[in-house]
Image 1 (tube, rainbow, N blue to C red):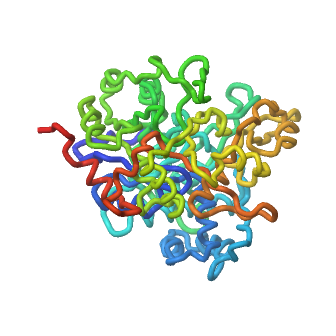
Image 2 (cartoon, rainbow, N blue to C red):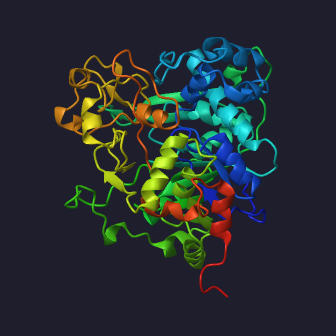
Image 3 (spheres, helix red, strand yellow):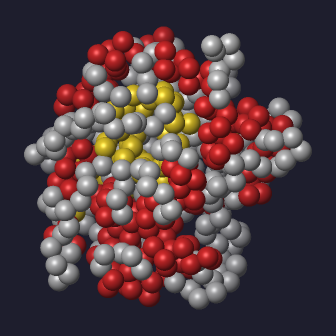
Length: 488
């Protein structure tokens, strides 16, 4: 089943704000960018946990409660509130209440939390303007995708942007949700016979059971993040529904990068080496006739002009927005990185080991974070969120989950190779800590942050006005849309 073809007479954004980290691209940032007429994007990663922890902090400003008051099933919103809201906020040294770890057959409470999380973030991002808002999700986090997507669609999300994998089944899921039908996603399952992979399923009618029929929803545009023309062609031709465009991302972009093509080679510093085989064939992408945006160190007027010269609609920009006032990154962390940039010391390390997904992951090198070897070594391994766990078939034929960042004994007991453990970092906990949602441990204090950004972090201080310590999303947009040097 497909949706009617979109006619691109409707204006497309020149700038897509990147969907960064866990709640770095929060509703405040997305709303600010969309209010300016560009495409603001919220991060949908671990969005249920984000909602649960904000409520436990007392929901300063009442924003989560305001969004939940508009949720179409009041009973769901009430259950989420009863489970997690703490009047006045939990004590600073108290741990956050645990959220069940995701799986292919999640509990009703987990599903409700993730639908509500996607809804709340998009609802708040859309307040006060009539421009579209997008949501960004990682294909690697498969078991949480459908619930979060449905919640975002309930709130009227206009774009779904997805990378870190091959999201071939997402367009069809959007088609089905738009008409109230169930959707399924195959979950990558190690050890499963072909065609026998685990399946994640979400049924809008079942979710609304007892509360009337599932509503008919607007089908958002689907934009896939790709790093090659080959992947773009595959998605355009073999997806189970309509693909509406691409973000073409290079290896200098933040977050997860596509691995280099061919055997992995490392530089003397230990970073993956990219070569001519990784260059994008833009002629083939243009032949698809779909809109595309360039990403990765495009955060200036020259980058926008170069993208347009290639036939792109514009650019996706992440790092510049990541360190502006509206970003979800803790203010003291933003100031720390901006000061490093002022002094010429801001840099990222493209870590081939950090992410349990196996994809290279960009890590900002900053004191007091998990980028430091001593800080990493001192952290006790724990996997209590589980969004990057890999599904696998156990010896008895049942389904299990394991993560290369979990405790060594657990990983080995589940059949994982010990060599896979070296250097793996808990992205779930580290990224939550970056936005002020760090879990507090009984011993060892709070989880340390893990900051991701693109290579552009070295130049991010250029957005700072003279004698200022911060800048805004409007400053970034104004700079990007200013004439490129030498332009007529």
